[in-house]
Structure formats: structure tokens, C-alpha cells
Image (cartoon, rainbow, N blue to C red):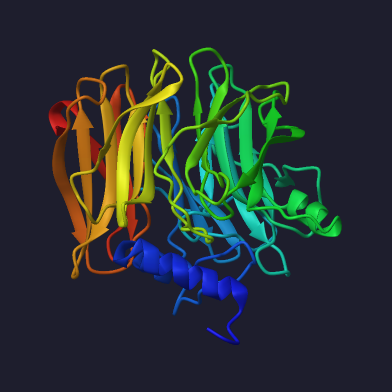
Length: 407
């Protein structure tokens, strides 16, 4: 491959290893290597959407609306949505390409919190932006930039979650350490995971706290509050020499994170980022239920498993060998739900899997299909029941109840 840019060569190698499922993902989203190259897509999808229920059961969705980030609300579990409301009064760019999309979370006192990545002029750079509403979504304060670092580097792939005490955690992928290593002429694989915390309902943030070096560059981070008041983070990591498995840590409100632990052991060695981050949900008993994509024994595979007592347990592939972009939620110690999409050659199909025994056994059901573009599915919970939000180009926002009478 003489004359080809190094970054592009790495991406091509990665797509060859991952096979058709990963190739389809890269064609939809673009694919970045550690050198900052991108496989150009014919058209970048901007259906990326975030969603969350508030304390009263109102469903909020956040998405890109031209030069704005907008929210809409539903009081009937997604059967209908109210008008769009712009979160930022001053137009600005916002990423909305599946793994990097607007997010929304809700507070204990009716607050609505929205984050997004604002792309900067230099390729693959950005700022993590945040806006909040303290009046139930009637109005939003002017957005702020979460991180103190203002270098024109990658602060991207934001994640947001609220703990049981109402504190707001925002995490992101950060490349300041890559730049510093390059200045010292030292190697540095991947990027880093950073986070910030707000103890005043999103008015101000304290950070920038580093969780780990050598994260993957373009995969979403999963955040989930724990019963003991911490925040679990799960992300795709670069383990020496170059295994793109997953790592986890507990984030403290004081900026101190627990030591990084390896959470998956598929040993997928690829010098490119697959744009395929994990999902995680912590059950009341402290068990971490996880879902992730890797290439195992040469096959693209989405696996589900649980992390308990410091080790990975009960790993198994989903029933669908074409599964992509899965999400997971633990309703309680026993009720677990998983959702994903897959392409069968004609349609992209939405499916779900339910467990009533803590992930020991599962039942699979088909939910919907579309012949046009679609976002990743997002699992939500309210009042002990799981819901799947799926936004498609043709059908718009769709919400599917799972479990109980929806089982």
C-alpha cells in the first residue's frame, strides 16, 4: 500500500479484520485511527439522539436541529412528542453521529441536563458543552464548557450521568496527553478518559480529573451510578501491545478514581477505533451488567456479561450474529434488558433480549425494522420498566416498552 496515508492503512486493516458488520458501521459513521484519519462516508448520519425519563415519567429526547441542540418531551411514553425547544440560544456546531451525539440526563429536583460535543475548526477536535434547566425544561441557562482545558484538541464523546445524591458527572475522551507525549517525542497509544463533577446541580463543574491513559479514541463511554454513591465508568481501552478490550473504574466526587481494571478479555488487536462503545448498568446489589462489541476468533461479536466480585462472569454472545450498537439496563437485581440493531441485507432490525434471573437465561424478541438510516437504540427505565428509544430516518422517534406486560 505504497503512498497511502498511515492512518488510512490502519483503518482498512481494521475493517478487514472486523468483517461485514464493522465495515457497515464504519461506512455509516466514519472511522478514526490513532493518527486522526477518517474513512469518508458518502453522507454522515446526524440522527444521534439522547434520551432520559424525569422523576415524573416525562420522556426527554435531545438531538441536533441545524445549528442548535434541541429537546422535545413526551408525557405518554413516546407515543407523541411536544414541540422542539432549543437548548443553546446562540447557534453553534454540535456532533450528532451516533457514538458522538447530544445526551440528556435528569436531576432529583426536576432539572434537565444536556451535553454535546462542539466540533472545532481543526479536524477531530472539540469542546464538551453543557446546558441545564432548573424549571422542568421551560428554559435553559446559557451553555458552558465543562473542562478547564481550552486547547484546540480532542475533547469528544461526552457521557453524562447523575448519581443518587444529585451530583452530575460528565466524562469524555481527551487527547491533551497525546499532545504532551508528542512534544516529548514519546509514544502514546490512543487517548485518555477524563471527567468532571458538579455538586451544585450543574451550575459549576470541578475537574479536569483523569481516569486513565490509553483509552480508545472514538468509542462512547458508559456511565452508571453505583449503590454506594460512586459512578462506574466502562470504556474501550488499549491494553499492551494493542488489544482493544474494555476497562472499568469507579469515579469519586473528589476527583479520585479507583485503579483501572480490565473488564473484557477478547484480545482484539487492531490499530484503529471501531466506533463501537460499550454499555453498562449497575444493579442494586452492585453487579455490573455489561454489553460490548469485539472481534472474537475472527468474528464480529456483541457479548453480554456481568462483572461481579472483581471478575467477568457469564459472558455470552447475543442470539443475533449481526448485532451492532447494543445497550443494556438493569431494572433490579434480576430484571435485565438488552437492545440492539442489525442489518439483514435489506432492513435494519431492532431486537431485544430480556432476563428475569440476573442474566443467567434470556428470551429474545423482535421489535421493529426500517429500510432507511437509523440511530443506535437506547435503553431507558422508569418505574421498574424498560423502554427502548429508536430514532429512524423514516419513522422518527419510536419508543418500545419491554418487560411485564410488554414481555
